[in-house]
Length: 175
Image 1 (cartoon, helix red, strand yellow):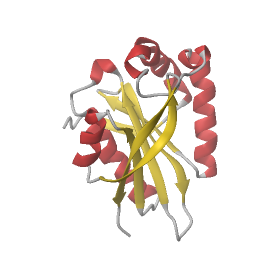
Image 2 (tube, rainbow, N blue to C red; image 1 turned 180 degrees about the vertical axis):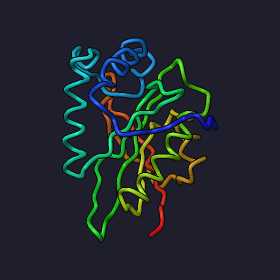
Image 3 (cartoon, rainbow, N blue to C red; image 1 turned 90 degrees about the vertical axis):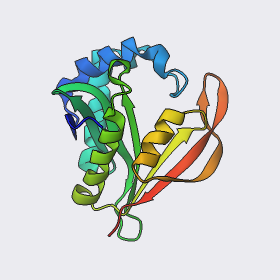
């Protein structure tokens, strides 16, 4: 695992770096993510997206982070769907790493760090995630971070015109 990997809250200034990664990696991510409008791949589109994420952060429903290596943005890690109520206290983890930085332990370290954010900053009790059944690298990241699979969500996401199944993951954080 790369110990130089860090995570921090996303900032408006991250739009250019994120857009550059997304343009370069559009084909890399096509099998794993829903289609996006062309504006998604622009710095302006990312700036709008970041503002929406930060509004969600202010509302307490999302913790949107960036993944850094050597102080350069190389991806994102987000806790979404936050339910902070005392009887729920959970959130869902999602992440991506730019193709130029993959296979160096950054995803695993980013998930490890965001789990600390979930526990220490957000006071959450449960972390959830989902992967496509075929996404073995992402499944390894989750397993290495203490997640266990607990079910399959059938026809849960539309990708390239086909409804795909997702493997559901969970980890109890404590508290």
